[in-house]
Each structure stands twice: as structure tokens, then as C-alpha cells.
Image 1 (cartoon, one colour):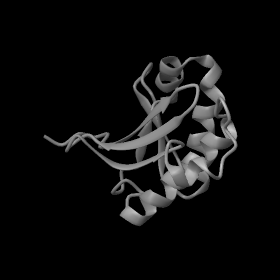
Image 2 (image 1 turned 180 degrees about the vertical axis):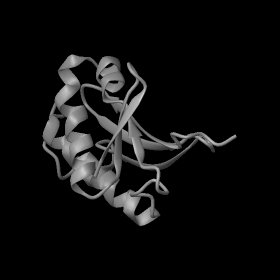
Image 3 (image 1 turned 120 degrees about the horizontal axis):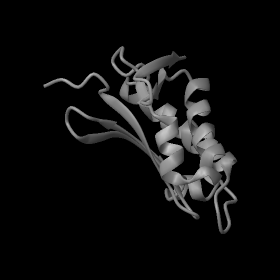
Image 4 (image 1 turned 90 degrees about the horizontal axis):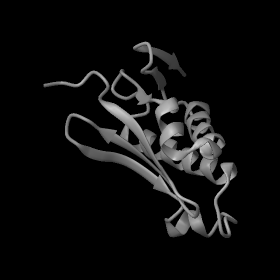
Amino acid sequence: MTVLKRYVLRLFISLKYITANVVDRNNGRIVASASTVEHSLKSTLECGRSCNAKAAAVVGDVLAMRLKVEGLEQGLGRGIHVDVNKEVEKKGFKNRPKVWAIVNSLKNNGVKVILDDDDNGTSRTNY
């Protein structure tokens, strides 16, 4: 069975770290990932006790580069689906700038991002 929303962005935000994964829902595996836990990112950021929206934007930039290396920046023509409202609800309202920083950095780096609105069953394509 083929899933229409094949590639989905999943975010994990804690007080100290930010992780962004693109998941292939057909195979159930992570195809690209970026995190402030990685030594290469951690050494360039000044997170201290908590990461901010600037660190989230850097995570989005690194994820976009890794998607381009994998050849998935267009999501095989279907795009990378993101339900921003669900991610904000899951992470808490105070993390909203971090969620949007990741989404905007993906869009700015040429990743085809599709914003999903599950409330009314519609999708918006943003390039």
C-alpha cells in the first residue's frame, strides 16, 4: 500500500536539543536527520542551557542539505509534508518560533514543503 503523504517531517524539541527527521512512511525509516546533538553542529552553536530559533534554523539548513544529497528535496515529486499545527501543539506554544524556523529554512533552501491543515483536510504547497 502506498501512502499519499510519503515523506513527513517530524520534530523533537527539548530544552537542550532540537532534532528534525524526515520519515518515509512507506518503509517506516528515517531518510534524513539533523540535530543539535551532533558534535559538528553543537560546536558551532552557542546553545548553552537551551536552544533558540537560530539553532533551529541551522538544523533546518543542515537537514535541507542532507535531503539534497539524498535527492529528496522534492520528495519524489510529492514534497515533504508538515503539519505545523500538530507540531506546535505537541511541543507547546513556546516552541512555535523554533518549528517555524525549521520549516522556513527548509523552504529557503529549495525543499518542496507542503503544509498540511488536518482541521479541514487541505494541503498547501510552498516552495
